Image 1 (cartoon, rainbow, N blue to C red):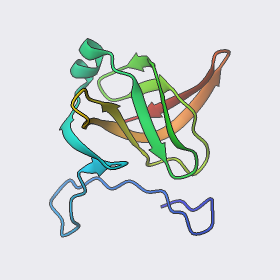
Image 2 (cartoon, rainbow, N blue to C red):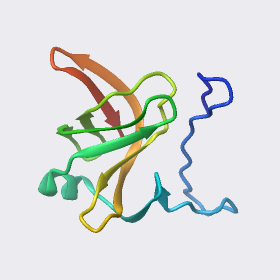
Image 3 (cartoon, helix red, strand yellow):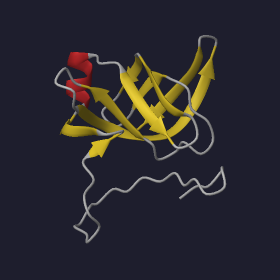
Length: 115
């Protein structure tokens, strides 16, 4: 849990072994319809979005995909770690992609990294 802005918490929860925590299957009011694999991401090349506690929604094109990480151009800042990363689907739902964990910068701007 990270609290850069007083009263605003940014966190991600991954349930690996079952839990009494209720499952929330929506992002920004959009239902999560599926989880995208690295293969899906490579094949479909969707624009990816993140919804950070600090900077809100930003989306952009993919810059790299490995079996364990995806990188894309979007804006983030301290306090956005743990944000959901997703791809919007044509039916109004979203596909879960990962959780934001870092960013880097190059001459073209900011790159967000998720796993």
